[in-house]
Each structure stands twice: as C-alpha cells, then as structure tokens.
Amino acid sequence: MTLPIAEAIAHEKSTQGKNAKVLIVSLHHPELMRGGAQQVCYELFQGLKQDPGIEPILLASTDAAYPALYKSGACITGFDGRNNEFLFLSTEYDTLWHKAGSPRLIEAFADFLETIQPDVVHFHHFLTFGVNLLALARKVLPNAKLVFTFHEFLGICDARGHMVRLTDHSLCSHASPVRCHQCFPERSPEHFLMRQIWFKRHFDEVDVFTCPSQFMIDRYAAWGIDRKKLLHIANGQADCSRGIKLPVPAGPKRRFGFFGQMIDVKGIQIILRAVALLRAQGFTNFTVELNGDNLRYATPIVREEIETFLAEEEKLPYAQRIVQNNGSYQVDQLASRMARIDWSIVPSLWEEAFGLVVSEAWMFRRPVICSNVGGLAERVTNEVNGLHFQIGDPHALAAVMQRACTEADLWERLSAAIPQPPSVTKMVSEYRGAYGLADETPSGLPDH
Image (cartoon, rainbow, N blue to C red; front, side, top):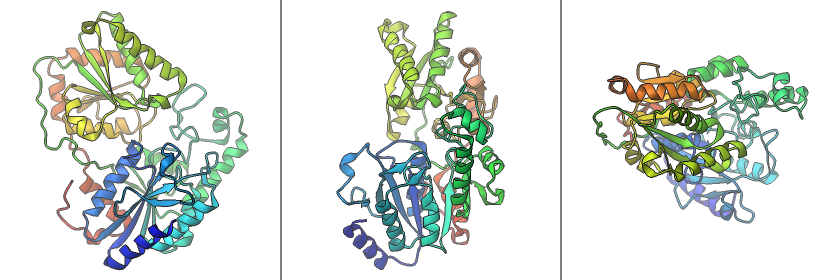
C-alpha cells in the first residue's frame, strides 16, 4: 500500500466517529468489469453508506484488463478519487489453488487491514484475491466478524464453479476426487482431495456464510459447511425502473429479449437454436432482441456458432429478420430496452445462484422464461409468474416461445403475479444481522 493511501485512511480514521467499520472485498469494480457479483457488492456498499451507524470501505480487485491502473510498486490504490473506495492490484494469482502468490500483495493486504481496523470483513469472493486471505484476515483481526458470500460453487468445483461436467456438459450434483478427475484427467484424484482440504481449511476461519438462494445452502451444507453458519440473504438491487411504468402493448406478446453475458453457460446459443427450429416450422411472427457483451469470453465453438448465426441473420431482408443484436448496455438503458420486449428469456446452462436479470425483468413487469433448475427455478414459479423449460433443450424452449406468442391472456396472468424484487434496503438490513449489528438497524433507509 502506498504512503499517500495510508495517510488518507489514517486521516479518515481520525475524523470519523465510532461507527462500525465494514470492509467489503469485491471481485472487480462494476465500473471496470460488469458482472452480477460485483454489482450486488457495490449495491450493498452504497446501501451501507446510507446507514448512519456504519462506515463501509470497498476494496475491489482489478487485473491485467486495465494495465494503466497499475503503478510501479503499488499494491492497493484509491479509485478515481472516491472516498473509501480502493483497488486491489491483483498479480501472480495462483489459479490452480486459488491463492495469493505475491508476498508484496499479501503484506499489503495485512497492512491495509491493520490500518483501517474494520469490525467486519465481508468477502464477496476470493477470486483474484486468494482464499488464503481469509486465514490472513483472521490472523490480523482475531476479533473481527468474518463474512463470506457465495456467488457460485468455485470452492467445490474447479470448472469455473458452475458444476457442469466437462465430459458431457451435464449438471453435476456433487464433487468427489474421482468425479473431478474425470473433468480434469491431467490432475489426479489425490489433487482434488487436497483441494477440498485446502479450501475447507480457509473456510473454517469464516463466521458467517451467505447464499442468495436456498438450493445453494443445501449444496454447500452437503459439501461440508456447517449449516448453522449458512444464511439465506437474497441479492438486493436498486430499482432500475426509476418509477417508469412501461406501456403494455395490445394484442399478442411476441417480443423476446435476452440480457446478460454472451458466454457459454448463459445459454444464448439455446435461444438461437430455438429460433432456427421455429423458423424451420414456418413460425416466424416473433422477434428476439439480444442485449449483452463479453462474447470474447465464450469458448471458440460457441462464439463461432453465435457469430455465424448473427452474420446470416444480417444477410436476410430486414422484414425477415427475427434476431437483433443490440450489444452491451448500462443500467440506465434498461428501461428503453425493456420497452422493446414482452418476455425475458434466461436460458442458463448451469444452476444459477440467483439471477439478477430476473429482478431486472420483474422491475418492468416482464415475465421470465427460464431454465428449470437452480436459483432460477427457485425464484420463478412455473405457470404462476413465469414459465420454465427443460435446461439446454432448444425444442422445449421453442415450444414455450410459441405458446407465449399464441396463448391468450397468458402474459397478463403471469405479469400480474410478478413479486416485488428484493430491495437494497432489505439486503442491508439482513446483512446488518449477519454482521451482528441487527439491534442498531435504523428505520427508513432510502432504497436509492
């Protein structure tokens, strides 16, 4: 940590009252790298700032995607001149064991903890930081409350934490040394046994774990985490509708939309295959709008499939096109993009932990059509406020899409039953409880 940062923290410490300090450790800053985990983390940070009894500090990681942010000799720097927002300049990260490998970074993190002396250290991930920083935080701050939020299953599964088998792309219900060896045949079963021991050793330092869905709690409890330490706290989100009530077009609801990252497990290719099936059957009176980015992170085979489909679509006369690629979007653009659709399709190929895109669709009263597994199936109730289809099956999705276009009053019935998405206010209140600060919860926090 550079001296100016240490001096800035010391000055803030001397001028602040005795509010509880909460250090929030985030995988990336959402303004540098978009993603659900970092968006939730930043929403929590902003919500805690409205609490007069808490002083939140954000430490967000960055990586080689922004080389100009790295300064010679620096490990932790301020972020864009903002109060209590800092960047962890991740280097030498060990992706095999998910540990911090740089002695300078480890020392800087310990120094950062000692300088700010937080009452709570809340990790929203270990990726880019290192799971070994959990034990370091406990060593430096033996009396602090250590909280960890799971956003997927990376502690259990080394296949990006998605628990999708690399052998046949089927869902994986549990990990074992042999099963994991089958996905990574170059690694021995003993490696995965040691991996499990390694992760559990550091997770043992955590006081409270939170999961955004109940099925995640069950999965981690089955893996070996004490169920008494696992809390269900839904991912709250500021109302991105900003009070805008989109008009409901008359007649059939034939406009579908996808929102999210254009990578393999998000399943955008399933939508395109469903479109091809419906087109082959002569059913073409509908549209699909794609809203997202990060196609460069898809595997080559999936990226080629998506790019080829979109290129062929562009060759068609405009009146014959079904799929429109709108590209990436910011939160303040959601209203205009949601106004162009009736249904939000979430075709994920893994058991999503929560699905922020569900909340975004619900804020605009758009019913969700989603895969029938995991956090999506837990949130979206089939035939009540949305529709399910068999995960990964373009035929099943095509059938649901055709039904959505043709069944009278289906959209109106499902839209009317959409619940209010979890708010930032509720999330802040529940995390206060997880932090051991529930008795001081102020009333009337604004849901910014």
